[in-house]
Image 1 (tube, helix red, strand yellow):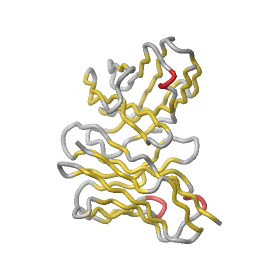
Image 2 (cartoon, rainbow over the protein chains, first blue to last red):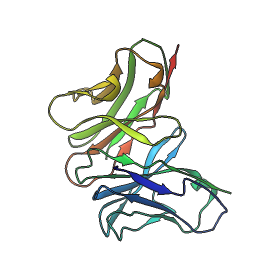
Image 3 (tube, rainbow over the protein chains, first blue to last red):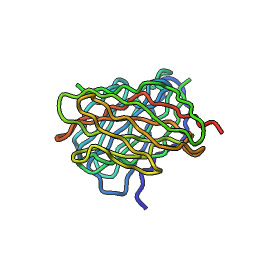
Length: 112
Length: 114
């Protein structure tokens, strides 16, 4: 079954404690992306990757890091989380044409 | 730069009534346009897309949208609303060709009243 998986699904942490949210896809997609969803703001793109070792900033990259060492994985790293990063995060993947993005189930992060 | 504007953060319709969710975009080059649906506590699911060709596109669950270049619009419609259509809907745009970021609208929550 074609899918995008994210872990963990829920996470409560404290300010400054480094964390990683994993994302993995089984469709051999080149393009992967991270979004955050906040009420009234819709989805905003954090980072995207066009292929292994190729990443670029989206609209709201501050405070986040990503890496793409393998085609299937695209982890999101928060080196020093802050309360304003409390949000619902989605990973997505698509083939190079980006015509259809497949979304993961979401990770709800709370930073206290 | 590209942007998407969804008019109305909340829309209420009666069951059986027409659904119309508005989306206007701006893009300096021909865009690809999308509508996604998000049911409560779930990820996003593609409803329909416009890339090239026919400007009226049909999607899943009886939804359709028409690309109107002159009006820079891509409104989503469904002739008759069902209770199961209650969800949040997002319009999105990407530039055709090349690797560019995806821009989403702020979303419209659709309420269907029995």
